[in-house]
Each structure stands twice: as structure tokens, then as C-alpha cells.
Image (cartoon, rainbow, N blue to C red; front, side, top):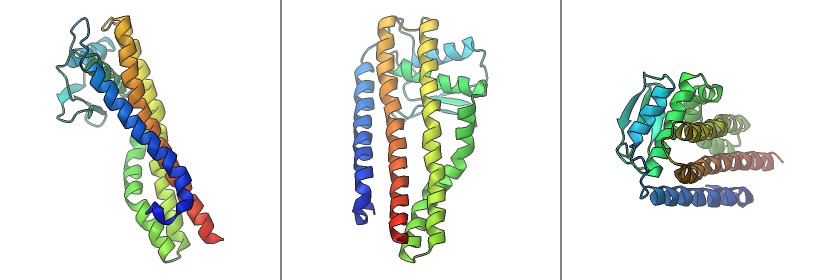
Length: 226
């Protein structure tokens, strides 16, 4: 749909290329360190359990999810889901520690995580309706629909921006926990950092794409008013 508005491509193309690069980085880093076992041969599940137990968090269940790189923490159900829980690789242990970091955020009332959870329903609603309303407004020259579309999509953009500190903080917690608890060696920490940095880049790319789309909407709306 953006092809009908070439003036927005200067914003979208760099964000799109960043997204492609981020996906390449995370997949290549994960594949590389999935082949490197930790010296202690600790599994991803054990690493997450150790981190949670050490922090006094005992009400989080760890489950298996059949989706590569689908690892996540569900704060509503207090479920930590891992795609490779029995793997002893640097990649799997690092990702498990990152997700355990989210569970620690939840347990300790980390404000950005609470804000992100609160924004989720509005962001999902906004991302589904924003573009249809925006382009219907353009077609029928209805400024109110255009504005509502922009406002709704702004909620989705807010979600991507709030996600950044949440993800960065979870990675810092993961690295600190793995080092402090001696779950990985100093040499393996660099591999964990490479995997988590690559994963963080995907969130940066997602935020950049969302901001570029919002700016494109504002640019199109401004041009139509003139």
C-alpha cells in the first residue's frame, strides 16, 4: 500500500533493510552458538530454574514450546516457555536466562514491563484497525478517520518503544545472573552476549519500522491537507 505514496519510501526502506539484517544476525548467532555446549553442561531449563530460585521466585512454571526462537515469558500466567529446554548450548542457556530476566522483572515490579503489559491490548487493537481506518479516511477524504488511524497506530508504536528498555534490561539481568552464579564461563559470556545483542537488534528494527510507518502516515496526511 505504501507504493502508492513514494514519498514515504525514503523512511521505510532503511527500516526494512535493518529488519532483514536483524533477522539474519539473530538466526546466524543462534545457529552458531547452538552448536557450542557450555562447559558445565547445564541445560537451559536448569539455568532458568537456578536463576529464578536464587532470586526467590518460586511461582513460575517452565514449559516447552515447539517453535524455534519462540522463547518467551508470559506474565499473565507466569509461564516461562523455552524452545530448547534440554539443550546445554550457549545459545539456549543465554536465551533461557534472558526469559528468566523477564520473570524477575515481573516479580520485582519493573515499571517498563508493567507499562508494556498495560499497552498490549490497545496496541493489538490499534495495529489491526489503524491502517484500514487511515486509508478509508484518505479515500473518502474524511479527516477524522485519518486522525483516528494515526492515533491508534501510535499505540502500537508506543508498544515497540516501551519494549526496548524491557528487552535490554532482561539481557543485562541474564548476563549478570549467569556470571554471578557461575553458570557459564567468562569465555562463554561473550557468546551469550552476541546472541542476546543480535536478538535485541530485532526489537530495535521493529521499533524503527513502526516509527517510520507512523512518520509516513503523518507525512501522507499532511500532504493531503495541503
